[in-house]
Image (cartoon, rainbow over the protein chains, first blue to last red):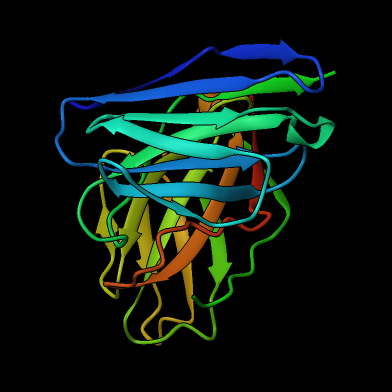
Length: 113
Length: 112
């Protein structure tokens, strides 16, 4: 069966520090991969998605970047964190066209101080 | 994607069926109805989806009206672990739009 891992689970970082969040999927090949952010009390915002290695699409301009160095690995990064980057970061995967359901990881709660 | 309307909250007694309504009066013929839920501090969880026929799986049943303008998610025997925010989403089949647009959803509280 497929599983999705995210780490770390929680993170507290000072403003201006770098960020690296990692997501890996097991049990499937060539998944679509997604990074979402959920600010406190708000809905999900899609940040990036990837349909293959090295293919990254950005949904909103921001302080973050994403990379997909391997088929089942998706990394979210920032060179300098802002206070507004605080939130709950979720990685998800799906197969096939966007019609198919997305499966979410456990999330990383980031607090920028 | 068509817009959906859900009640902001509802309570349900443990062991009873929970019926969660969703209005999607502007749904088009090629849009599917999806349901997800998000338990506090966890990622969203896919529940079920359908086009026009009623659907059932191990988690829930989805009843779609004949005109497809509304649907109901049924949790047959609610447990305390079903307390979550439930999201109803409609999406075009074969769309190139990868993002899931979650609205405010319905906060369901299951009480003992």
